[in-house]
Image (tube, rainbow, N blue to C red; front, side, top):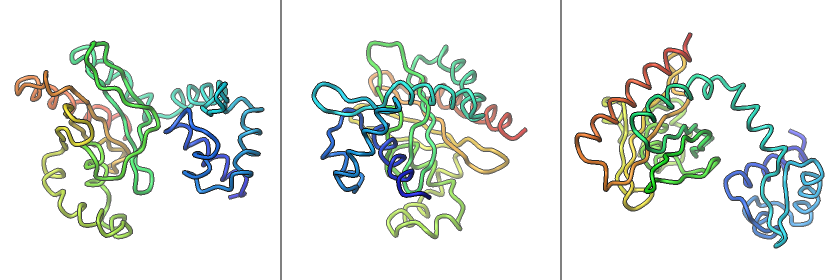
Length: 232
């Protein structure tokens, strides 16, 4: 890949997950020379892909928003999943997310927000290490054995400990990422390959056993419906 293109993409990805960040911090996180980072940001600002606020911090611009909206309309995973997620959300007014695997991380690419006063807020584009939380466990568990061989030793060990997740067809976490929050995640398949996962995040204060079981069943049904449409 052309070096300048690679740098621009690296900066855009970082701003997607950590907006409102200064030049020095952005250069440090992306391990990019500060002067090169500044020049690249100037070009991205000119194109409307990045904006700078009055404090000198950077965030994605309106052109990035337009590209993101176009991507949502063009990516079959989001197109197929969104109506089904909205249907679940009409019954369970919670936060639902789609995450994909990106190397040894997971990244959130879609979110349906709850309308309840007490809700779990998650940032689009945020990244976590594989194996973290319910979604991270799902995306790690359904990697192929060949893919898992290339993981770092810690993740490789975790992969072999997730047999129960693969057998159950879902993963759950309770307060692992955020205290007081529970999550359930299911894999989404395209022709028998796990391409993403769908998860629900719920404040533990309303996650009683009956509600929890009903939500888990709805997610498993959604997994089947979405996977069937993706595999057509």
